[in-house]
Image (cartoon, rainbow, N blue to C red; front, side, top):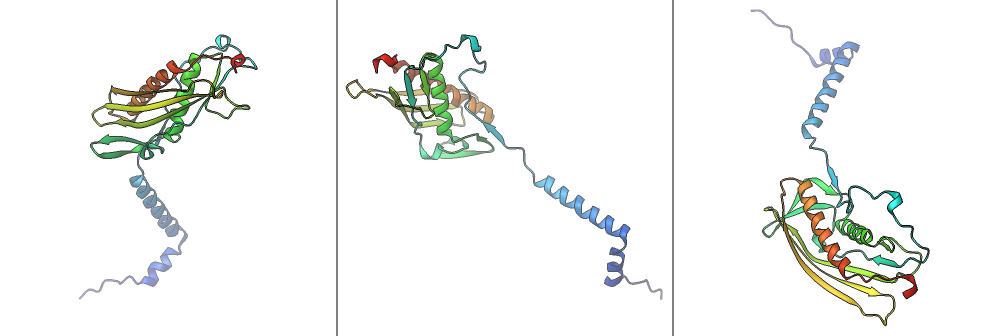
Length: 221
């Protein structure tokens, strides 16, 4: 009968102390950990903004200089449904709200909508200071937009319901109120498609609000 040598735990431990074997063991553990992490890693997270009304900024020479007494218009933070007011990019599937696993808005959606509306309105009134940022003095007009519905479904149908008010600082001047129902369709195969479709909807809303904005000057205050 032939007896084979037995490997004892003490022998394995002794070999593990050997410098070359120890390096090989550490290299094997490192490679295994890296492989496990690579297997768990998903695609990189993408961040989207609603963006500016124009991808090509106007030349500096074509932008009129603001007067120190330019009329000021404050755009208040837009109100949207609670389930939308986050950084999640979502689409509707019937009664279900489906969140994108790969993409987020760079800011809360209400902030992105407010910025885009203010920038779109300002582009039509370059001699007026129209902003959603804090002002040094009281604004002559304040714009408040409330969005009650803003859905993009998985078939590419988008719906936006909103109402707005334009409030003058002078209580003797009339308050302007209006509302709109907008629909649009477009591709939604990617999150970039969804962002582009929502951007178009917000610009349409901004144009309707802008149509109600009275042109004022500081001398009228």
